[in-house]
Image 1 (cartoon, rainbow, N blue to C red):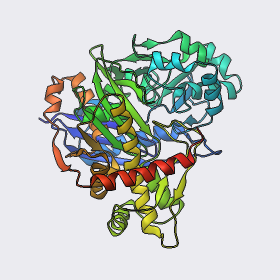
Image 2 (tube, one colour):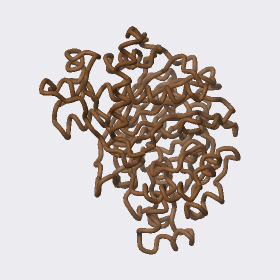
Image 3 (cartoon, rainbow, N blue to C red):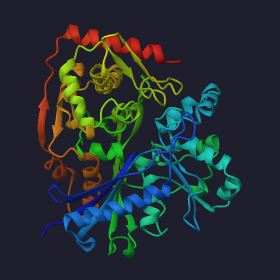
Length: 493
């Protein structure tokens, strides 16, 4: 009898649930988009209740499509958009403010002040992160400062804070479980990644009361059991990891030096560094890869805020295409030697620039420029930004031998070939590109005994296609030089 695992993949623009069998094969999937709120320039919010409702709906939908009853599940794994911050009432379960999304930049001035006051070294040393609006700490403080009475209620233990994993876990267990895992905790700027605990000095610095924080468990752990009424039977919730960490696991990057890059709303490149928490000298992040059996595994990470979101903007904002799949035909027409550059700094620039005040631009426009050139520039911007990250990693002394890719844009052959060319490394695309959800399923399977070891999980990974670099060094250098010039023009640093 097959053993099934349900993965909840709660993303920035949609909630998805996937049922996997024990071989890592998808047997049922459901997905639902939800609304994005942009109340001011640089502000991005979600309705946390909409997130929960959409998650519950897709869990039910995926089970129905798979023809699997909840009672037939071995366990549930949760993976989630990271850093997005929810604060809710412990009694009613109601959020006291909309979720502040990882892309949100409203706390930029506070972060600038903390940096100018000399606190960044402390934050980097303890958390591996930079001081930036991206992370959860300043978002949580903002909510407590701007909702009437919230700070006092937080001090009194009446409120709960969590990233989206904690919020979903709370709801699935009817308020019985207030936990997170080490990967999500490591993205708050409140968690000491060396001693694996919430850091009192950082809590004081960011003014976040300890009383609202979840307990931190391993990435594969007993997180609780779903209330029967949600899915029809109680199911063990046995794995949690932030989306990029889950993708690293889904890509079976378990050895130091292995790397993956995920192309979703943003782009995130993560390199496994084993039991060494290496400090970057090039403004990359040191973060948890995962924590299993109490043993931390670390990673170096570069974060790009806008990848697939650039194509979404070209589709929905400029209406240059009606579907993302049309982009390949435009790119084939234009070719790689495109003089137009799109710098998608819609909410600032992430690694290695970390400029929250930068804004997007399209450069190199002439009378000959048309839709095809601009759309191609959108695709190329994802690869150029990845090159920025790889160059920073290499400058930190961690050369990249190859790259495993996943996420929505990884199915685009043109983009993956251009990526291999501009990076000058081999790019491997797996058979299952839903590696974020697969990683969550693997974690749940490890905890519930579906898998005995990471070696068993590694054996399930299969390469679907390899992309080898064919571009001349001169063209590679020329194209990337044009990109660096375009980025310099939008930066405020």
